[in-house]
Amino acid sequence: MPKVLVVDDSLSVRKVVERALGTKRIDVLSAASGKEAIEQIGHEEPDLIVCDVIMPDMDGYQICDYVKTHPHLGGTPVLLISGIVNSTVLERAAAVRSDDVMRKPFTADELLTKIDTLLESSKPAAPAEPEAAPPAVEAVAFMPEPSPPVPAPPHESRAPLADLKTVLAKLAALPGVSLSVIVDRDGFLIESAGEMLLEAEVAGALASCLAESSEGIGRELGQGKFQGMILEYEAGLVILNGVDPTTMLAVVLRDAAALGKVRYYVKKALPELAGAL
Image 1: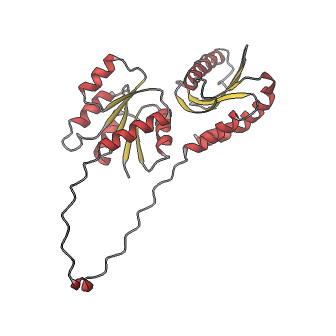
Image 2: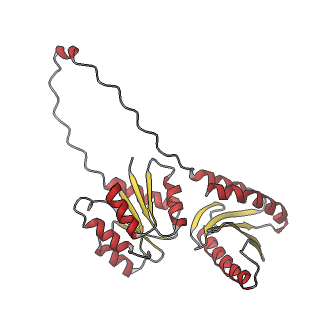
Image 3: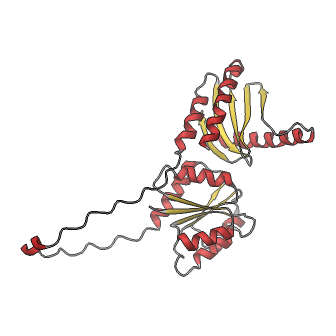
């Protein structure tokens, strides 16, 4: 089973990657800092490293350079992730021999495609077909029977991404609802369901900005933490609710008449979403 190390100081990003890879037979390791990443790289020798460019102690370029100059691990693929991907980022990534650069936020499918490609490209070439062996002599009947195979130890099971997707899909299927989105407080899209013609990433990022500014207002007025809000527009409504301290739910309604029923189901879904996260 291949091992993938995820290096990011954002817990939400690490969760997104872990859940995306939880749908495949991949052992996911995580590190919240450069120092922790270096320790994991030395102890675990991962098959692939997904690393954020900006972190508090060591940046992703330094970690990539460490891997690529390592005497035994230099062939390990490194995928750098960054909120900004411009010529400067690409030049620095090339200088440390990063295998690829991916812009944040990204979807689970985009991440899986990148990881599958990098893991496949890092596999050693298949050995040449050996020459046919001579016929076995009949004395083979006296050979001892092979030992039975030792069963592999069970690996730790992870909650599949479908759990979160299923809850969001139920909300998106309600009459009058166009889209349901889970984002973190930085606007990073975790999962979405509904009419994909809508820009889920944009909806999530804007919802995050609104929630952050609204929480600031509540803090200044002594009203405590942000719980939720309803935004009214000419073509419909947007319901925002905090799921946990780091994530938020945005539900887009095209029919204002459905508000009461949708709010009821949203409140019921919040504990399920928190559990799925």
